[in-house]
Structure formats: C-alpha cells, structure tokens
Amino acid sequence: MNAIESFYKTKSLRGNGIFISVSLIALSAVGFLIPDTASRSKSDQILSVSGLHTKYNDATELSDFIQSIKRNNGYLVMGTSESTNLANGNYYDFLNENDGEAAKFSVLAGAGRTCGIHIPWLMHHRNELDSLKLIYFINPVYWRTDLSEVDLSYWQRYINYRMSAKVGLKTKEDERIARPVEVYHDELNAFDKAVETAEYGIRSIRRNYFHNLYYLLYPEHYEEQFDVSSPAETKKAKKYLDGSDKKFEPFDFEYNILKSFQHKNWFKPIDEDADFRYHELRSFITMCQTYGVQATFVLGPINRRFIEAYSPASLPAYLNTTSKIEDLLNATGSDYVNATDLSSAQGAFNDHQHHSSYGAFLIYEKLSTHLDE
Amino acid sequence: MNKKFLNIVTKACILVALIYLMMSQNKADIVYIYANF
Image 1 (tube, rainbow over the protein chains, first blue to last red):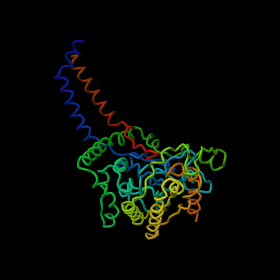
Image 2: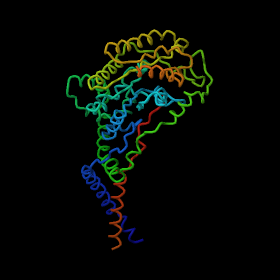
Image 3: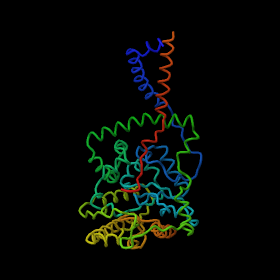
Image 4: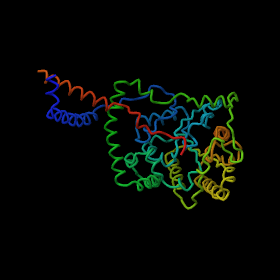
C-alpha cells in the first residue's frame, strides 16, 4: 500500500508522462524500420476494398486490388449512391451471377463518390492502370442544384487532402486531369488543410505498426481484409434472376416510386449554369485515355415519370443535361451504354433518383449485351 | 525495491499499451458509405 501511495506522486506521474512522450517519438522513428511484407498468396479477384484504402492511398492494398482485377480479366465498377447495395441485387450483382459472364465485377461505390473523387488514388497508381477494364455509372442527378459543385462533405469523406496533394503532376495532361481535384483543394480553408495533413501524417506513422508490424506478425490476416466472395445481395440477385424470389412492395404508379418513399420534396431541379460536373467527367475520361484504362460509361436513366408528375417544368433541363453528357461522351470518343431509354420504365425506380432492382436488371441486360459485343 | 519494481512494471505496461494502440486496426474511422443522400 505504501509503495502505491509513494508511487502515485506528482513526480512519478510527471516521469511517466515524459516516458510516454519519449516512447511515442522513439516508436514513431523505429516504425520506419519495419518492412512492409504484406502480400497476397491467392490469385482470386478482390471484389471490393475499404474506403479507407482509397482515402489514404494505401499502396499495397490498392496495388493488390488493381492487379487482382487485371489478372482475372475482371472489371472495376464505379458509381454513386445508385450503385450501392440493393436488396434484390444491383446491376453488377446480376453481372456477377450471369453464368455467361466469365469476368467478375469489383465495386467501389458510395453516395457522392463521383468520378473526380477517384482521380487522386488512381493517379497515384497510374503506372498500373494500363488495360484495367472499368465501368463508370453516370447519374445525371449529380447535375442538380445542390450537387452540381464540389460538396465538401462528400469529398472529405472519400479523399484526404494530403493524399491528393501528394499526387505528382508530371505533364500538362496530368495537370488537366487533376483540375477538378484542385477545385476541391481551393474549397478547403487553411484549418481544414492543416487538420487533414496532421491526420495523414499520424496515420502514416501508425501504418508502420497497424499494417507493417501487424502483417509481419500475422501474415495470414492480410487476406482476410479483402472481400473476395459474393455478398448476400449477389445471392439474392441469383434468385431474382431465376424468378424464385420476387417480392413486390406497394408501388406508386403515378410517381414511379415505392409507396414507402415519403420524401418527394427531396427532388431538386438541374443547375444548368454549373459546369463543374462536365469538367470532372472530362478529366476522368482524359485520365482513362492517357493511362490506358479501358473505360465503359453507363449513362444512367432519370426518373422521368416522377419529374413529369412532381415538377414538369424541371424536365427540359434534365433532358438537356442528359443530352449534353451524351454529347461529351461522343466528343471524347468514349465507349458508353445509353440507359436513358429506361427513364420512363415502370417499376424501374425506388425513389425520385435511384433505380430499383428491376431497373438494375434492365441496366444489366443492356450492359451485358454491350460487353459481349 | 518495491517502488523500483513497480516503476519498471508500469513503464513496461505503458510501452506495450502504446505498441498495441499503434497496431490497432481501428474500425471506428472506416469511411462509411451511405445508401442515401
């Protein structure tokens, strides 16, 4: 008891504080001596990676991800919220379940995860991009008033400023490709930049331990972080495809949405004056063409029947924007699938701007035919 | 003697805890991907 009492004196606590500080500095320095030995022993295709890896450009994991797709002659599917999980499967689930389709489809999707957000991490790996097959889903709703410019909440969710600032721009072409990312950088204030730089630095120091040391001690755990087997949605997609599991939710035929969707007021008109999204798409296309990515774009449908019923005056701008996106794809000689003819398809949407599993099935049919050609 | 021993044990525990924290693969800061806006 006496020993404990005498130990917890201010002097001892001060000594421990100094010890922690010195240890942290010493551990940070020693960490750089720990080699990165992580490597995959399996050759199967990685179907997705954590958003953290793309946010901080975790080089080992991302290289393995890209190489696994190329080695298996698969595709990398990218998209925004419409390309996230759907209860009965999304278009890539159907593609993965299609027996005639030998290739596998890996996915990186999320709300607001537009093509420009992928530019920094892809540019870090530009020497590995040659012959990578990629599908990017263009959702025209990102041209609407509140999404037509850089939305910091999305960009900061997916990109660390320091990681994107570290992309070396060696040519004029690289500078052109990185222009939308520069717009994002300009939106950040000095405090945001300082915080994200500190975050990146601390994580880089920690990575020597949570990655290098951890996988040095437990190499078998490296494989476990990768998603290589089909998710539950893909299995449901199989049932959907063979017709054994078709459940229909109450549907609002006037608005072409599920009756359970109660937020019609979330609809926003298109901002025809904003041109950031065109620049973003053009930069992404330039990157694909410069670094040998075999990109196929899907020009997604808009919920035309919803717009006609809820805000008919907004329809011309939606149609005009869709047409301008198509013009851009044509002008750049891009390979694309036009799915805008599904805009009026009954049952193809869950809400004002996200396709349903049925809509996904229709998109899958178009995409599958196109890829087979 | 006890005090010195306790001091060494404390410092060893601190060091182990620091390495453990550095190695932790914290899932809390994973980028959550939301299905809706």
